[in-house]
Length: 219
Image (cartoon, rainbow, N blue to C red; front, side, top):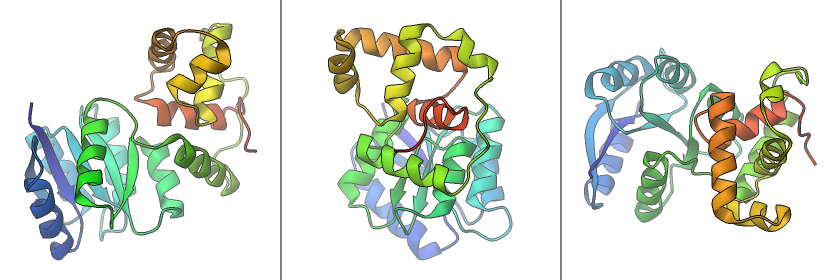
């Protein structure tokens, strides 16, 4: 199945370069390009892509607002944030807005393609170590105040809460299985139930939820 991608960046040279790189990757097709967030939102609605590569800093509607609008609209497209710096504070806001991950603009073509494929499968594309670093920095920069009384937490079983805590710590399914002495397939089942009960899109959003509710704290 071909993965359909929209590229949003205010620099034509960057858009063209990404389009050429992705066009050479098997199973990926660039179906549209946008110079700002408003155009990205419109193209996403019109073209129904699988993935949107979203620059953050664009004139008019920036990547943060565009990401939030696309996610809030219920569109199935998943957003990958493009950034120049791996700890750009805007990345954390974009993840909160519903982005499924982030990539640096100097990411090699093969790694970029792999990231797109990962997100298109419905997974978050942040490696566990990157997840920990991102969320620790996200919280340090002052995300929302903890909401330990969030009623959604009460929907989880004790085991599901444990799994959520470990997701927020950046643990992989294999590591969670080892920690809890359960099968990896069982972990996948628990992760799916956690996402469904909390109405979250992926593991990254689950981790952010755990931090924001105060279930998990940095460190």
